[in-house]
Image (cartoon, rainbow, N blue to C red; front, side):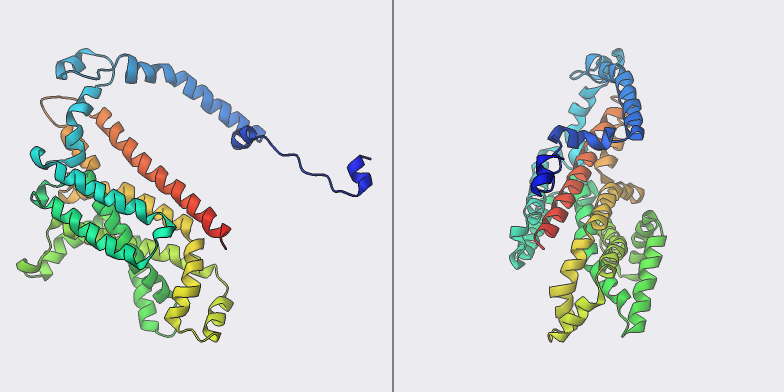
Length: 354
């Protein structure tokens, strides 16, 4: 027997090294080890060809003729079209306006991610910032807007517009006192989730002008923002409903026993816990809508991916556009990875402070 056992002190578990904790998911079992080795072998086999195409034989500066004469990537195309990728058809001499609008939106997003700023004044900041961004963008007609500003605007419309509606839909679907409202919420959620997003875009883009007088009809970009907000509301509603179902009914009963009204009980007791539980599916919905902004091309709008596709058709370059698509993919990957990492941090923080 060990000295620890004789002394009555339970043995302490061995602490694994930090490096091993990172590698454990890859090599923890025989199956994971085999898959990891196969993946590493594939990466090693493909790395020389990718390095040769992307770096060694690539053209970083030059013209179309230089790219056609080379065997590697044409990064000169990306450098030449970078401003067009980011801002689309917006007049070149005025592109400082959408650039500043993107900075305003990015600043608001960054501040909103920090719990210390979750105060009512943040709503006022968003209203002022959104107004400032729109005022900056209207330096040119909306049919010239494109690139990164449009991608951000569509994503924010889906998240900021769809989330409050989704919460109300989730509460309405769970309500038992008003069967008509419950049935309406169920019908909305199931219909919207059962229809492709591109169909909702077409419906809103075509049907809204038919029911409104021309003077009150919103222009095409506004109709797209409305469509994304309505579509996102159904997906957010199901994520929130899942969080609500994970709570015991005694939580609401206890809140009501303390004299809280229904809405106060929801706001102060139920929803904070439900939203904490629903962080992973909510983040998944946000990531999905970040990527689906490219569907606005179907109604004649050009987001970041749309401007890349439009630039690839330039007859002065005659390129496949692969490099431009890789540039867009890198931005989308960065946005989605940042969203996923933030959701994981927020989830850890939320449960740590319970």
